[in-house]
Length: 310
Image (cartoon, rainbow, N blue to C red; front, side):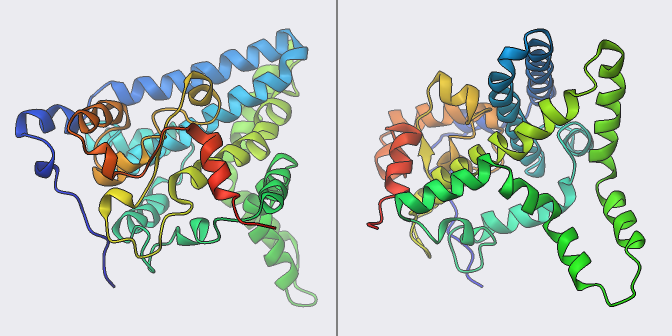
């Protein structure tokens, strides 16, 4: 297996420039986690007090659900906290869980970025696609079909694969065990909201955005990062795309600096909150011209990804 080419930070930065970029904070990552949960709680409170704002709350909460996944991703790189034990604890318990499994998978993606062995290659290989195909994908996302398949697809397969006469209950109990933390969160949120008449908060304000908006913006993020990038690309500055994101994009679909994905692949252990500074420094050094960068934002990336004629 041929690993993807890597970037040596010394090629672009002096030791004095590089040291603060690589520095991991003992509080910034935790502050971002606190920010994500604070925004989720504020949006939830807004929706409970003014139900007419529920659609807006779905967008806000779904965006921060992605934000928590991004911060777990930082933890997978050991970049969320300078103490690795705290890093792993926060990544596992404060962002959604599954850190160890994700770390193994994701570091394989970095090692073989855009090479044949890249486990994420299937996400970018089909592009460009037709506009109709992209619309169908987005419709599946926003109607919950993608989320249901991802969360319960394996459960459905196990049910279909059971032998005649094989009891269903053990399969159901195994599924409950696998999703116990997710279900426990629902029980807690329901118990907290019930005395205030908000027993519906978990299904309406957590599950709906998790199965709809979160799925769509996760797809858009994947498209922006690697769609239309050549397989077996030899240039490490073009393994991933950085996409310009304004305030609305950062609030709704690109939280916590996830749009600086080229810089992340170049320097994968740099904490997410240092990526904008790395971007500015590379721009000043004239490196940006050789990087995969879309200044036109996510709309322009979608035009590129859906550019195959029908």
